[in-house]
Length: 270
Image (cartoon, rainbow, N blue to C red):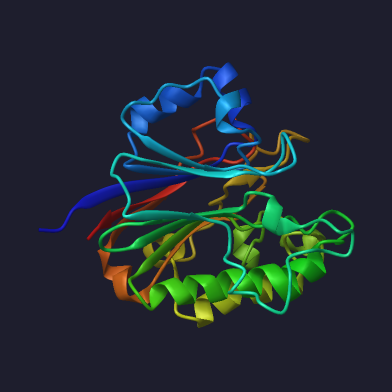
């Protein structure tokens, strides 16, 4: 008998801040996700004051305090949980950029294995305003992450979600022309996102909603961007082609505040 799961992903831009604003537990109470994937937690578990008996928590925090970090909160116990991209995936290379910043120490990936699928949360490195991390994205990170997802897919279908730090197409940001070539909308980043699609992964929101406009997940703090919906869609759920039909809904929750990103989610029946 298929089970139905509500899976939500949210870049919280600092979980402690969202909790201090008393926005996190009301969000959980309202939407009641079966699995919640977080990015940019900016904390270790012992720094966070929450008590969520309904969830098992799996954290991957950055070595650098107050930076990056991912987590999965799940109401169903996984078969197995793995942090980071295994070094065997990118053997012969590394995830270090030209400024010696090592993405493998930044707590960017958690993978939970369930009976019928894998669930991965990812916080893709930002290319930076000066594009100093763009070579890392293009030559190392995105290539390794895709290879990892395809490796998992050999065993069972994959659902991966998170802040991929790229708007795929012009429709995915409010002002494409002035942002051409800037971080999050370079040809290189968009090409690497297209690699996921070409490899058979399905962008669930576009699959369900087509070319609907104004569907954004991140807004700048400047110039009333969120109030005026001048945003970017950089948070995604992608799934293996084999379970595309099992995705019953894909949604964005712009009404949820507390971060510069809003949550995104899917309903999966599998």
